[in-house]
Length: 264
Image (cartoon, rainbow, N blue to C red):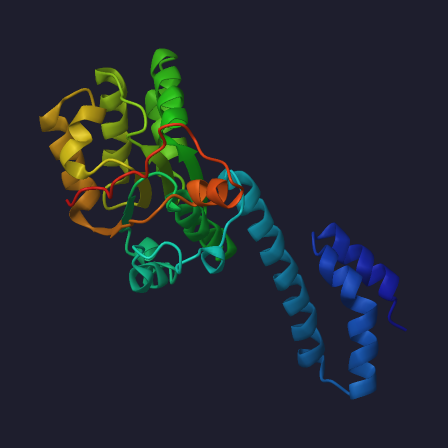
């Protein structure tokens, strides 16, 4: 007579905990429906596979570093009338990641660039793709610290090259020093044609050199790598945050809606 408890124990020892949990139920179902051994075993394997996929998605989401979870379905295209919905819908298929292409989301503050970047990143983690989200300011701190500690190459390998999708948020909100700009250039160069990058920025490309220590030559070289295989989404519209303040009857002294980001 088959000892289900012993089989379950062996499954646990082999790291097949879900199969052990489902074994009694699936065995009973197989007996009632006169399933073949192959059908019985297939159902057990399917249960184990689904559970492992779910654990993997949960781990990838937790380690990605998202500030919050957002989805493309939550994005208000009716409000953000300047958002290119067809392009963003195409990007949501994630084929750009398989082709190691980049995405640049440009627009004024508050139009949902970070929301869209997180939404694409979250969708990637749900598809089993290792993703990392980091603000440009935090990335600069990490690159600078690694350089000072003599482990910049290691950080570039593990923190920059390893994720299949790297999201860098808010490029241009703070200017970088010459050394910081050089480190950022190295990060982009390390990813070139090897892995996808999503960047959000409120600064048009023509003004990026002001962010990167006024070095027009290095900025041009960086943009050449970043935009060689890239999808650029120009997003215009009123700030979501200003809209919510208006709804609440809150006005800021001298507050003005930001102009649309200039063209490339």
